[in-house]
Length: 632
Image (cartoon, rainbow, N blue to C red):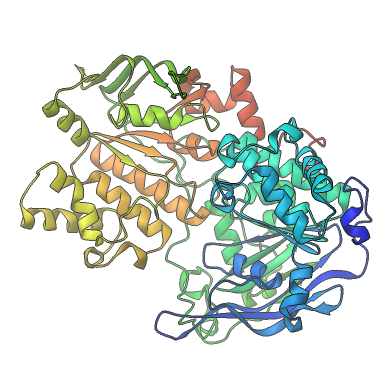
């Protein structure tokens, strides 16, 4: 057993020695496409990571962020292969290492924290078994020693009563606690480098803040270098010293976080920052998305990959791939205009205000609604869990009601009850003034035509076996609306309405990006011409630029169609900008409600204040001024 495996994780290690810990030089990665053609996922990526340093890798989906990280750890999936460059760990080239050597490096020298803790953990294994497997793979002592070490690791990552929780299965932990288990597994071998791939994407603001605090504290105390892959600029500002911006498989800008986020040199970086929703921006602010889509990695352009979307593109940008050059002290950018400029690009904090019509008459109302989920024991019914405890709200035509709160606060349960996917156990629901709490079969059909939902995951919510046309027409068929010809015409109209070409109807969902799939989901929800659209975390799985497009699309549709929207999200900045009013939920109750700007600027409930304090903003100076251990 090595010293690294037995040394205490709490010891302080020296940070930022001169020698590079991890050095990536000219890394290129290819995959084999469905037709056998090479797909160039990463092209000529170089960066250096020193011990104790924190580096963020940002960019849209498909930019090469995760592929670069997996290639650095020699964990490329499927047909992925390194086609050029080198990865040096303390001077050792991992691209030349054999599988036996790589097994010794993974976990012990390079640890990985994956994005989705629920799919990354085996649901039939306990937390202790997960940790025991990792410790056994690294030769850590006998069974009793491994159990003691597993409890120590759970305690290190902040899980209460770690010895007792070792015997619990993943479903008994919250999302944030499951992510802590993954971090504990990654730390079991006391690695020198920890790669965290979107570790906070699906987490609430307060849980996200806890995970980020944990990562930064471990970095400070153990000297473990951190590579954080994220599309959340607030998370980057909160956590990392340096940032690497990737687009089209290449690095387009890198430098100190404070410099890159406040003085971007590359147009793509400026575009990402302009698309970021700001908690300080008032309600009704239109987000600035980046027009167009990233290039096809199977057919990369000859010149700059961003040229077709770039407002500063010159003729030479489309024919010659620009090199990464120094444009300021410690800052590099792959943009000739950037090198010629004396001032950085502007990164707008807020865009134009939307001229929104005033809300009209009430279309949906809930009065003292309760929902209890009961479990069953072996012999008798157990005490139920109260998901909604006397919730009352109103929603007007043309109004957006934002609903925020932590996981388990009752947000999604409320959405399902309002949409009649789950029945209310008590209270009253009214739609256009009519009592629809327990509707007849004909009444339920009318409710489901008037109230439609847009779901969180654009990948899981669309049937992969159906064409897009069949997906969008499905509500029409289920409700018996129109014949085949009128449905086809309606599908074409809806696809145009959400910004897609009608020819998309003949293709399957797998042919579309995440943002395009969410547009398809919105088109499906609009098919029966509802008056109420309930959006349950519709942008949490999307990149910041795509998120801006979807948020703006929903605003445009509301203005054009007079829709009433219920918008559920854990990103308070997004909720403030899209909402007329905000309702804050905690433990099945609404603890505060009011105009969006009033709730965000003058919160009255302590829980609301805690949510706002935990929300990260892409302003590095604000985080540097924050005392250690306080919310972001």
